[in-house]
Length: 290
Image (cartoon, rainbow, N blue to C red; front, side, top):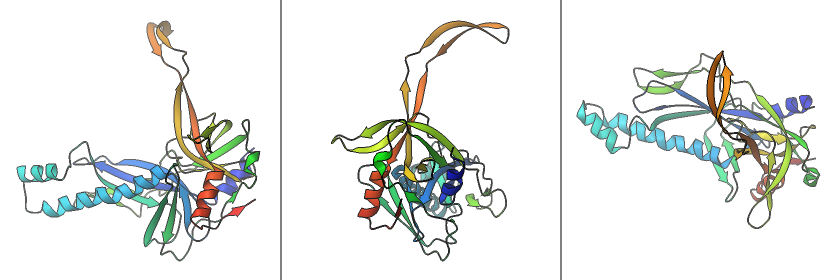
């Protein structure tokens, strides 16, 4: 049903990769999110919480750079005191590096435009000479055609399998590496539109889907079987079903056990295409409807 649509949408949907570690740790944590380009001018859409996560990296890295500079020549308790002063401890992220996969050839600056209310953001890539994404989207023009019962699909990068990074032991910094796998496979997730989401004024701003949006799909496009953009994956909520099981006796692996189970349904929430188009027009960003 979505085979051709996925191929079409994949042309402008891209991954955001991150690597991070806590202070003093050698364990590197991988993360991912998604964006999709609007036009060849370098405008892309993602979630507001993803944009805030990206900008947070600069603050984190600046604090760690200060620590490295000020700790030169110090030892033992002096280093511990400095780390405490700067708010660094083993429970805190001390480094975070972010890269945009197959977006543009080079980046001199990023500008962020955050929606004042909804989980929506524009990213403007600046300083590039060549785009690496192959196509641009068509946004659903007749958005009233999107009704409960419609089957839709999301695309993103929820399972980070990239390995092109390392911890430079000598400099004690995380860095991207020219070796290793720089990409993760894209992952589609379909679902039925179950309900609309409205704000306090009664405006429809989003849609609920019968399946979850996976971690890493935030900011990914929501589209129909023709590949037209109907929205954007924002978050997943978890509703208690009430089918609770407590102290239920079962036989598992030949042994008698008592188990507990509390069932939830996981539903994806997406920003509605009407809100996205309104936001693009407010920021004077060109896009195509169809």
